[in-house]
Image 1: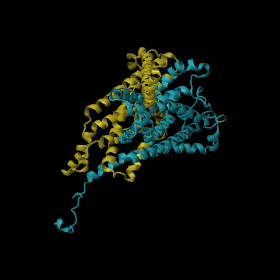
Image 2: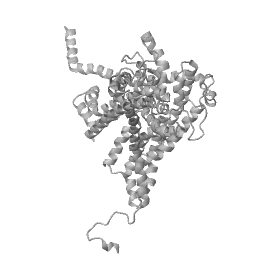
Image 3: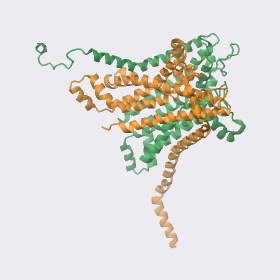
Image 4: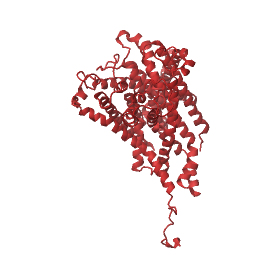
Length: 315
Length: 300
């Protein structure tokens, strides 16, 4: 009977004859799982910004002092506490640029070799090397920087001018840790460059090096730049290496031979002190975390934009 | 005269082929520099492993597994509660991320409208979360899970925070695995009258298991190496083994961090021995992942 109700000429409906409640429930459950990521982001933002805002509402703290002050001692007694975040920013900047000076050239070089030169046998040796480097817990790198790299490698070179805790050691070892990040993302970008660009360049008489440096790398540039951005964000956010090897006191300097307290290092050290909820010390953790979150968030957004741009170019 | 002409001849030849000759040297140099980047990374890895083994070998003994940590006698101290804690954390991360990560990936690949606003938002969100520093997850744990909900850093809190931290890794891997299942399987199944869920459950997921398993194992190996978020939520040195999810706990990276900081040689050797344990765990997990990837991944 129902068939006759269908208007003549209309296609038969593809909707199931009866509503499938089970299917609907399943789809809802799956959607809920997918929304976990959004809930997590909202929770992170709330968890950090709420105490951070209370931090700036404290009568002894002004935003100007926070951004321009050069002494950071929020855990001291109220009369001696100072809230200038610049020493932490300077230390993060110093360890990060050293790390990037190591990771970017070495990572990019490794990526170009793996993508353009290496045969399958060479790849099967070096790919696992990079994967293991990427998998080593960062606390292990920190141990290595503190107990081996500083005393055995750096102290003989710099003598007394280098401290037991110093930003150079932390930065260099962090750089090695980030090599795989740069290498694997850059390699993906390079492999995505269409073969006909290379063939065109070879046809014009270019050598392999010319093809690599003047055709392939420029063509993959936005992907490589995205890898650099992610490397910066990893360096800024890295915690255990600097917590072990870089130092733990407010020291406003850009000198890598001295100790420095990075933003992440401060968070870890202050959290170990078990600050009471609502105290300035507790809130200061979140104020620094907010700064860190904003910096890495901006870097990630730039990175995601860059990747999307380069995907559009060749697909 | 004849020599002169010969030289001239050679010069002429050089003029024609000179550039390539010069280039050949440059080419080799360039290639050598690139290779040196990889060799350097390998060299570093060898030095790191050698140093850890030399420092830790003497303390890599039964005490490490049988004894608890002790501040008084570092020579015989172990890390039983930390090793157990890390194993429990790994199992918790598996129990939480496998259902959650797979479900999210299934939704994004099989149900969501591709390119819709919702799926793009979730997509960007996952990419963002993947790059949030782990220490920030620690503050999420401290501010909400510890101070508001659970009251102290229990095993469950640790497992939840590490799960949230690596969830993006699991989702991305599961999506790749699901994407790799050919559409013809789905079409065949739907054509025979199966519902979308029947198709997903009986056709797509069984074929995506190796890829998902590989991603989960790599995620777990990252999770159990994390120290920063655990330090921030207040996981300290606990010298008893956790018996339930509500117990306080400690973990290998925490104990490594703590012992590495102490200036005495005996603690640093203990630290190195504990690092050997965690590196072995890491290598076992990673080789399992590689084995599964090579053995079970089907080529379509």
